[in-house]
Length: 414
Ligand code: UD1
Ligand code: CA
Image (tube, rainbow, N blue to C red; front, top):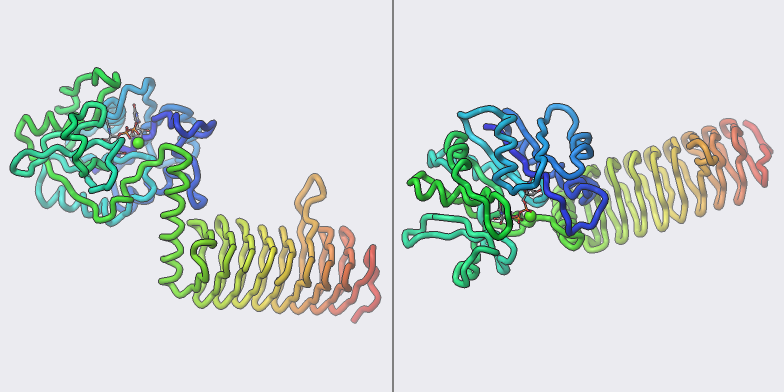
């Protein structure tokens, strides 16, 4: 099986300088979700049809995935034809999806492919029953219940518009049947496009065997076309990820105000308190307490039993076991050991206007309230900084040392 992902559309309604499929949802571009599904199902070759700002999409895809540029946006049938030329396989099966459906689940696509194979069909269409079908292609069936066509809303009769079974936009075809049918697709006079959905009518008239597979969860078919859709999709995915972490043994006190992006990892018995934002590739150990009001940014690694509290932000930093940072603090580019206490209001001044510099704090250190650590600095094992101390750039507090004042003076060495 080969796979074609359609992603050449302009995404006009996004009103954006960024191609639609690269807009992030829970920290990952829309297209990433579709690729994950495709890669889990397994296919020989993957070809993404790109158009508008295709270079950006190609750069995101990297190696191993084919792309083809659809020069003129002549519709979904034309997009598939472009991909077919690249894939150059007249035999085998083709899976077709759109790049803007991040809620689609792996299991659903796997079931679709399984039914396609089991029924030895020439084609299969993923459908969903929705409350409001507007904007989607409707599944038209004959008196025996067999699908005879997909009717786009603009071309549908009054009666057809009332059909609530819609085309999700995911299909499987025998490559040979698809190529033959694509040749017969005519330009749609209303939209001046070649519709992939017209392939169903062509195949049906030829007596080909076409099946449908109905998803249990209509949301899966949501396509993102506007910023409002983007927010709605984010809402659904966010709750999906949170449910996953709860099932894995993480306490999420308030899922409504907790934002955990797709690539975050969290250990068992960790508690995430309300109003917390955790981004990118953050790794959190077991039995930690995070929040309320905590912001963890990419590159952050927390060992076990770490506690981060109110208005604390951690970015590109490591915190060792049992380290505490409980009140309004910032740690950026910091390497912090175990059993360290970071006093309220502590700030790592990691940026000097040109470079981001490192702060190293060794095990058992005690950082007094309102300390400013002007990086690069190093605070030794068991060392202490006094309240309000400014540790100067380049300064090294020896193991067991005590530093106080502005600028910091070392008053005791052990
Ligand atoms: C399409 C389906 C509709 C289905 C809906 C599901 C057709 C004609 N209609 O409608 O039945 O209910 O998806 O979301 O297929 N694209 C290209 N090249 C083009 C045009 C589109 O690559 O020339 C891509 C778009 O980037 C997008 C996908 O194809 O990823 C679907 O196109 P879109 O214009 O969003 O189709 P819909 O009107 O939503
Ligand atoms: Ca769409």
